[in-house]
Length: 363
Image 1: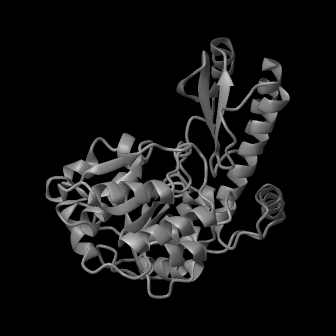
Image 2 (image 1 turned 180 degrees about the vertical axis):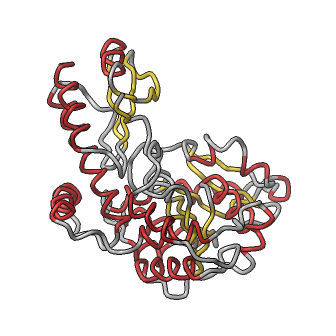
């Protein structure tokens, strides 16, 4: 079976594995080591945020819950799309910390500045502010759970409304690598426009791990990490991985060819880090898959510029593909099956060739 079911079905990029294997010395515990220090400096350089605090945790839900618990006072809540990961796939992890997730209707996974404004206005005009959670933080995912991506203009608008209402802005970047080549938001934009963001490693080439970036700092965040069980004793394992991911991409002829494929589909300059490069390549492969569906006369649920594609299939078409390819049922839509096919940093071009041929036969 060829796997298109998710973007974390392989272990890690070879350079990440080499970095872990090469870290054979003795290191200080809990992230106070030279590998974490070097990885953090690479991230600060990439995001042009020289004073940022950078921390490393094992998983996305753990990072989200810790960030939100640290950022909010006991009576405050976090605004999110009703499709957002903290709303749908974290088993109440945020509410368990005592903070309500205040959901807004999503628009292909996104929420707008106007929605945030209306939410806060409703709270402030309620007359019962002491009885209901106060919206104090806006949470978005980039890219979204639908594979869509916020534009820079949308992010700026959210920043403006957050400043007006004194709200924090948090970008969950569990798949951030796939969002970077799919929108006009740059690494420095994130450093300048948000209060905290995560850089997903687990789904973007790492064995495991997420980096957390606070551009303006976050006093006592390590205390919050420890309280949430997220201060890894062997933190150097995380530092080694992100040091590799944020180093320069390879310069072999094969890598240069992959750069060309990525650039043609993203419209951006050559990626400056391995992280950007391998994820842009995955996006390019995903666009090949979407084009194959359209060429076969099969509609997509919507256009997705990232590594997640959502095709509208009959049950028979889904069953046919599932004989040789792992894909994921998403939802029913007007009598058809919405099936998600997900590329990853590790997706082989030959596997995409085979999938495209199978799609062509469905038409």
